[in-house]
Image (cartoon, rainbow, N blue to C red; front, side, top):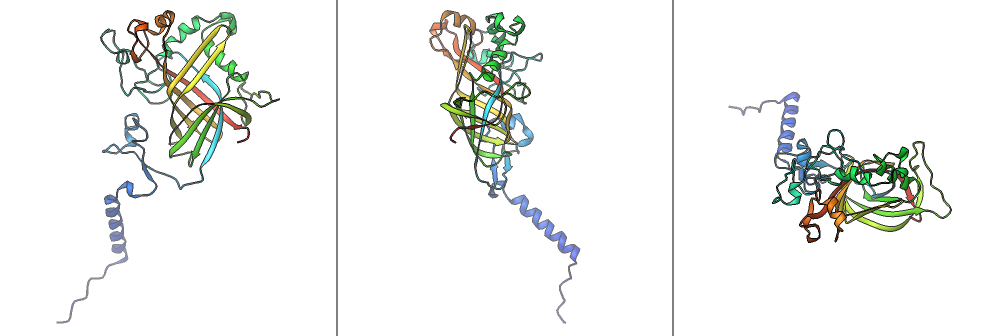
Length: 331
């Protein structure tokens, strides 16, 4: 008996087999097998809590990176700073600095200060457990200001006004360098440096239509204030710096904040930093009695201090910021 010929496979059947095979291979393949796939979960702690849809069942946040490009350095100058009190909904800018959500806090004297103070919800992004106790002190701080130094003699909002005046007059020029940027969308490794800046010799401050610093001005970098590293995910950068000092002076008022370490988040484009958040902890070393009386009820970091009757002396800070494109002389 002659051998039976194998059954003929139609074009439609061949296509169906090819598609089924491709799907089977894709199901077996690990995302890590793709050269440009990176798991952002270990790079962005808390990302799965902030956006559960971003992560798989195993807690990985795989991101397909764009083709690698020549690294770039982007330079900005901060054109707005704000240290606001809690808003009408009790929300504040800031970040979860201790990885713990303390809720409404407690008055129990045996509870460590970091757990006793209430946490907040961010006014900028979907982050809970925000640590920003200095926001609750803003009305007290503004109550100590000389009303004649404030617009209309009103101290509410005067702290932000002082910050704006320091920036537009050139007393507070902070330059931000974002280095090693391969992609403005998703980048697993960038660096950042913050410099105290000054005007070039003979130059004057240029203001834009809104009364803020105009873009594309050139400044001198006087001293390095802090540096660090981070990532960009969906166009939003998250970085950590070794320090970020902020020195605010006006008349007889002086507010010195030195955040060690400091964290920043901001939307990054080639021309601006937007929806920026600066967060960290300022520690008061050997505070005077008057300082202890103010911070004792809000301090939420550090060890108990004998100088403050057993109260902690680290206060969490959260601020908003924005910046416009700039240049650093001789760079």
